[in-house]
Image (cartoon, rainbow, N blue to C red; front, side, top):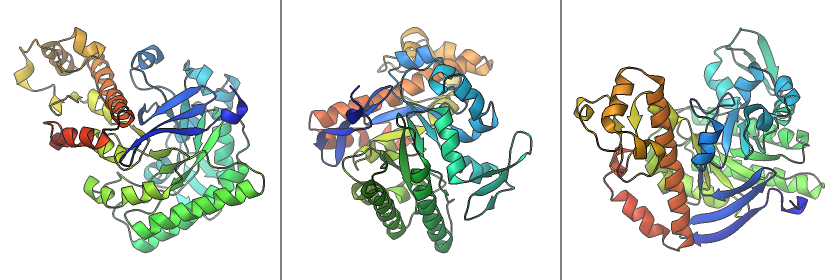
Length: 384
């Protein structure tokens, strides 16, 4: 690959605000919009990398916090990086682990210089600076790294959110300065809670950091994450500001809505110009016995499926729907057989990956508003 093409976003088509594009990485081209399965500990729970390839997954996520704790970034680097360690030859994205530090560490002490916290694994006292975080992510070797940021909960006082935005900007500047790996790009992260002016202030600050770095002959942000949504607020509250935030971001780089996997939310967000999504929802709900479908959520514990020998979702082409009945899947779920969670995970991942493939095709065909309208009037829309 020509180094000049690495981490280039190319807009192929636009329909309304919805976009179809490509983003090149050292491990392949990402076609957007897309849904990215989450593999927290270098594995999508219950799913092999061969299955991920069969599902046409383009990008897999891994979690910096958990991998830094177990097995450790040095070990992953010694193994040849995440791609070799987990036998995945496609693009990988690592989040910074900041969300986990803020949400899991009751011992957290926030400082201007970084984060002091205790490991949830063994209680060890740890301290991360933005520079430490970049060092860990560069050792892990994903194609896309995320800046260290402060993710605020919902609800939160405006003054608290404003301080988090400013701290995240300061850390974003330090992360970009510390990030040197040439076969890896770094995304900045927009924060600001549900306050539109704080969100736009965050965008403006990131763009200023980006421009200053470029003017000094250094790296730029390869794209931008939109963080701090889906943390307890109703999704309609998120949509009050999401569209304006997405449109404020540069058109020549990917826009990534972090931690969102609700099908209706994905379809609506694409219509606002978002390109990339990730969430544990499809696999987590699968392990609980819930399946996505073209008619809405299906609780496979329900007795009505006990003698239902039809496919899980007749409209779906995944291997689960092609080979297993609702009755069998209910049996597995009720018996707590691990195969039940695996088969439902395959289906749920396929559902979201295929949904984004169809959304992309609608953009390329110039009919995304019609695609969005059809989804919003479908039986499934109100159930997600």
